[in-house]
Image 1 (spheres, protein in one colour):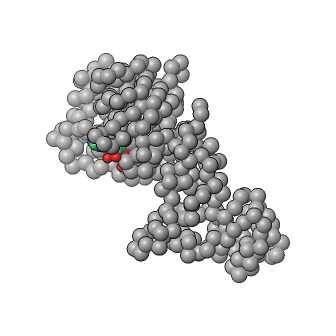
Image 2 (cartoon, rainbow, N blue to C red):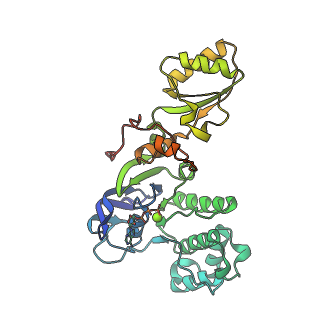
Image 3 (cartoon, protein in one colour):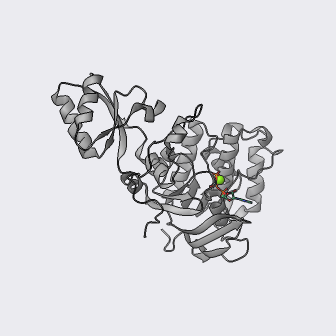
Length: 345
Ligand SMILES: Nc1ncnc2c1ncn2[C@@H]1O[C@H](COP(=O)(O)OP(=O)(O)OP(=O)(O)O)[C@@H](O)[C@H]1O
Ligand SMILES: [Mg+2]
């Protein structure tokens, strides 16, 4: 572990004309950490990652990368690699030629031809190493971009939606590469729209909403903060289940029409604390009603994300025809208390 954090950002702002893309961002990423950046479209993720890569300069605030303050010029310390908006590649060259060209520019660090082969292998592109990049799919380009970053043996790897376009095998390769780098002490900052991917990969996440941090901290704490959830139950006796749920103290039965397709095949959907849910299960079993399925309608991490970013669909969204929105309904006055807060660290 390096003694200084890989990223230390304080009060970063960045505007594009009238648009405030980043509005006082604090971010800490330790070496050896995979840190996820998540937020709705336009939240500022790519803009922030671009600053970490030296592709743009902040308007104000302090940014230290790998212990070095980043000044007002477009430059970041050695040891930083990655890409935003897709990797820059030569379409008329093959995958191997692309990496070899890069390796020859960085002969010291990249390990020559062996380094190129190793990088291709790590991202699972060995079989297409001699195909021209022009014919590569989105997922193959993403993986080649990651291979290019690997050649530089980064101490900070910055990736904008690296899982974009990846098939399941590609995703496994990319996950393994990212996890391996972190185990070797590198820091990885990546953005994603997939909370489930982030939960698997990241130790910490930062949630952005309209250029502000609305949560930063361990993934586990985010899940714990999701508060009261909607739970769907499937039982051996739907009618009895609905009756017992409506009588259960501390629980509210959520009308099926409020949940749309997400409540599919549930006998009943209830909202409330886990302790009240426990009591309902005891009552069901006591009444001879077998419980076949019980789970949150929306996964806790996703529920926390929707609440914190204010993107949970409203009832009006639900009633609009021909539009299905995955997520919770009836979220006004949500149980989340952390909205708009940046956790003190
Ligand atoms: N070069 C630019 N010129 C003008 N506006 C920009 C530019 N880059 C970003 N923006 C604006 O800054 C805001 C943040 O954009 P950014 O691309 O960082 O969001 P994002 O979180 O990456 O979104 P997405 O999930 O869609 O990738 C948006 O309002 C966007 O329109
Ligand atoms: Mg983006």
